[in-house]
Length: 226
Image (tube, rainbow, N blue to C red; front, top):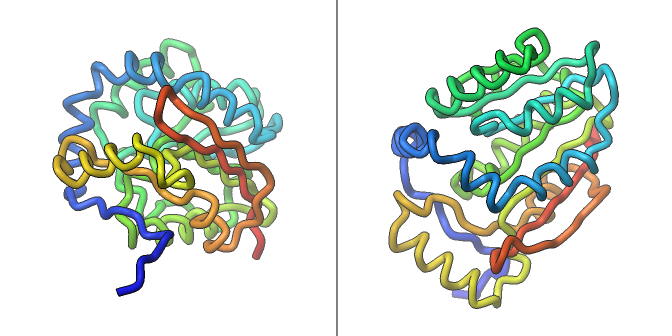
């Protein structure tokens, strides 16, 4: 069998296992995000070109820090939506939103994002940070099709993800080994971010490779082309 250089590992844990895991780690999540991910997330949001009055969706919002940042960009006339599989994450995010007096500007849903409960041609921007790589390999193009559906023409998709473009790196090999060995605990893996987004019919506007310590990450922004 010929080796496919764009092959990625599968995510074999169930959605229910994912929900349980993120409910358990929700109270510690801010520490890991703040330590490893925050500056990369904020930079990705900055590069999305969000305008005052925009309607924005974040998929996999965690404890809501990016939602609050996005709300600053959309202003009083904009609206931010979020969807996340974890009820505990959703509860934590809602508490932060209420504390910031942003409840009228941010609406959250606790649900699986595979079938987005939003009407077509609705959002100016959709954002995912460290979320796309949590979906199983066959589900990634399905989710991207759903995102394409809910985005307006010329709407923007921003994805920050673990990247497999540097697939020969020792870190990537060790990480994927651990993912295959302990799929319930290490439930994400590096993916080919740009390739997945381009194959879904988006035109790449921006691409930046980076590292979080040894982990290769990539920010990709694509425009919706119908």
